[in-house]
Length: 375
Image (tube, rainbow, N blue to C red; front, side, top):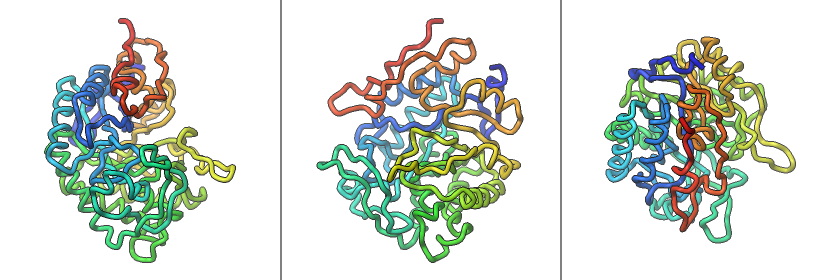
């Protein structure tokens, strides 16, 4: 695994190795404010050899998430909470990016945070997504038909403000959450975006929103901006026919390549994130790395989702991939980097029952209680 432990530069930041930690929803904040339990979680993984940590998705504004304890970054208490985490991660030698997130139509108007926000559930078009599980709302409702946002530039300003707040917190950069059927993916996808103005219709128009977001974030961060996309998705009821998918993401990544981003994270197909509707899987399955890497001629690529250590080594040796992000392996092995380096087995079993915590249960369970290997 020697090539995984070589340094790599991302934007203005030198990262100590190619072992990244992907953004992972864990649902442990204190009423949207990062806390000491979260700090312990991130520090464990920094000590465990993560070169680049990407935070769990951080809400850029108050929204009614399926995860009632998802953290935000729109007020000072949240900035202060993240600052403590960032400082602690830096003390262990790791770098950390904030992943910025807006749910779009995957919010619910009856969720407490959405009620506090006092605004509708916004999306590019008034088209509901199938699915959704708001377990903390009476009746366990699913997704609702959203309100079409009249002026998407309002949302651009939300992300720019979040980028400013992330800089105040001391992060090394920001990653735009463009994957998994949330707001950015909803603008990109023709099944969720049926606008007739400059924000919808053609491939160029549907890609306008993420490109404008990235440019706004670069006004704050320069080259320390990244994006994660999942062309072979399906989660949250998005996905286009194969050729339309390739045409759309090919155009998007071609334009992104001109911006000088720190990296693009390509999420491979995940069966776990591929819902079934009417007896059929939703996603458009294809090899995202071989399909889209050619569109990124100057932008570093990080690959995510189901990558084995052996695949990781081969990917990086090919010279086409800068690094690998792991998700579930980092959840279950806080010392994943050390295990890979020293040849220790990856034998911790995931506690899926407490992946997102539970009301009345110690938040450490299934979060910071995974065991390190014996060294």
